[in-house]
Amino acid sequence: MRKCAVSIEEVKKDVRALVGKKLRVSVNRGRKKVDRYDGEITAIYPSVFVLSVVGLSTGNSLSCSYSDVVCGDIKLKPLAIKSDKQNQEKTDG
Image (cartoon, rainbow, N blue to C red; front, side):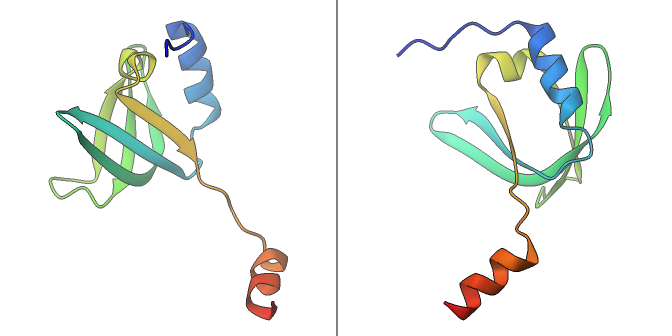
């Protein structure tokens, strides 16, 4: 199935909206290799953005280009923050 076309400007706007939020990051390394990290966007530049990630063995930051997001090599998904009420319902029920 063909992906819908997304411009780099739209991706930049979406990434700006995610700055400082907890994210689930999926990085497609090719040949069926996908790395998944939890982290947040710490810096934005004209051509790249920087992720501070947990679980990266070589360091704690990862730089990504906006074109990687357009191509689908990098996927950013905000982590759902559970409220105390939802956590209590799960433990009670």
